[in-house]
Length: 343
Image 1 (tube, helix red, strand yellow):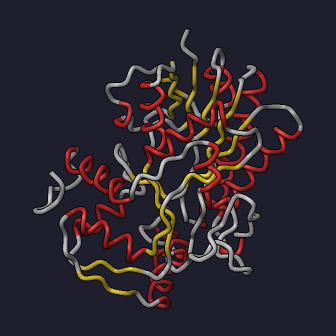
Image 2: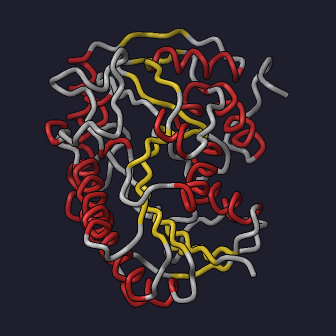
């Protein structure tokens, strides 16, 4: 008899790819979806679509009944600092509701999907830099960036770990880095690929990030169901790259030859604050905010060695992740295929 899995946040980049992998491996999957979600990432899959919200305990209770495992992916991911109350509701209160539902319905294991932003990086001691990437042991110390998303994801992560220590639940915490791949419906992280593929001039900042194929992340998450150690953090990442290096890889894969222009930090920060003002006046998150602008100059580097050792995390080259995402964008009408790009 197939084991039953519930996935919150099933319509996103990670959720869509995770659900596909779970179905391929024979799990019976329930996709927990906010009403009105764009579910194109789940098209063609044999899954149970369950309507609900992590802020609605009753819908969570109904969805978790009969499940063996829960993957909690639902979160509000944003660098926008002027929506802190809603971010806290979804990321912290939502996680508490998921834990309570798991406890009530005797879920065997909760897979809590956090983020590398809940681990310290670019610290005063030099952790999280290119020559000294952060590991799971580097404590959170990122409040200086004034980005509520980071704080709330760390708080949610610690609530899960406390529940494990108190023997209320069995849970593993997964900390993905910057993911790229197909089924990025919104798009989210793939916006980087789209912008480079469309641009003749690509501005870049001096920071960097850890990039990973979403397929590798999804597979490691499934491996963690049985092999992950309760209460442990696992960084799911791959290559540490400065943004200019990443943009050059995207240009190469997509067949583009844009001009790369280094952005002065004061100019970027000024643009970010103008974006904040625009967002406040319009009542919605701007395309660029002060938080996003400042993060563009930060080294955001991590070591995935623990997950490679314990969860068999693969290290698919970033070029493959870019190519897979780019082809999906082309095939689904987000982009026109560039001359000289992959067939």
